[in-house]
Amino acid sequence: MKPILAILCAAALLGGCTAAPKNIAPVNPDASPEARQLLEFLYSVRGRYTLAGQHNFISEPPRYDSVVHAMTGKHPVVWGSDFSFNALGDNIRDFHHCGPMNLTSPWGECRTTGRTTGELRQSLVDEIKRRHAEGRIITLMWHCCFPTECNDCNGNSIWTWAEKLPPQYVWDELTTDGTQLNKLWKKQMDTVIPYLRQLQEARIPVLWRPYHEMNGVWFWWCNKPGEEGFAKLWRMTYDYFTRVHKLDNLLWVWNTNAPRDIPGDEAGPYADYFPGLEYVDVLAADVYKRDYRQSHHDELKALAGGKLIALGEVGQLPDPEAYRNQPDWSWFMVWGYFINSQQSGDLDSATAVRRIYDDPRTLTLDKIDFSGGTYKLKK
Image 1 (cartoon, rainbow, N blue to C red):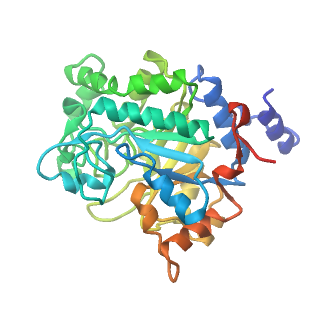
Image 2 (cartoon, helix red, strand yellow):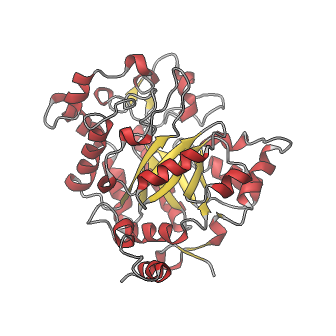
């Protein structure tokens, strides 16, 4: 029995440990030792600690991690980034918020980088190797164009909004193996798979969260509830990466948006988009505008069936009361430049960030022992 399983079983006392091995095991039965150890570590701190995280953009990967350190004197544990896309057209500034790879980091002068897709993604891999060596936990996502456009598109190809979502017959072609659209989807996926394979060869596990916020109404992959909707795309993606390409360093993070009822900007119930526990290692939610309703935490925890839950992206950090009342978030990750917009009441942004970073429940890099290439708490 692995040490963490023994700890959990002992804590459960009589007959209480039957579900623990099922939950701790990655959904990929061939998951790498490094992925397994990372998942075990996350379970070992669940309910006691939340890991601090920060998103960084592919065109300037150290930038916002440095901002956090300047504010707090500490580094986040979870280090996030995006495989991204190249924004085309005369409206590129409209999509600057997500960090297209051909543009400088958001809210600067919005210049083009002059670097190729391959150069940028390789530099991201090289940065990840450096961060992992420090003891960081890596999470990656992908703002991807519609498959017919691969990596280069007008941002409207990604942010379609409800009135321009793919009709069901297009969705059916996309998710049916062997169709022309399905082949283009595979070709698109093949543009990031080599970089994930490099990380696997370097023995770096990745919290992989593709197609985030699928229960919203803004991305082309959004607003497709039910078995023939998003769940089918997720399972297809899992199969292609895991069973076809044998990427065994990935832990699969199914990342929703916190449900909301804003006309034209809705996010539906978690369960309507869920592909099943056998395809998901971690269930996450994105929270913006400090919308830390207790139901966002509790309903996701109920759906998780004992698996981990996390805050995949946040705009503003929670206030101390919400932080205390929602103890099962395994990590939070502030979205890039939002780290500079954390004002709360009478607190300026830096003070509000320190309030959470200094909370005894928050794990920062200085509290992690990564000696021997395994994650554990410092004694």
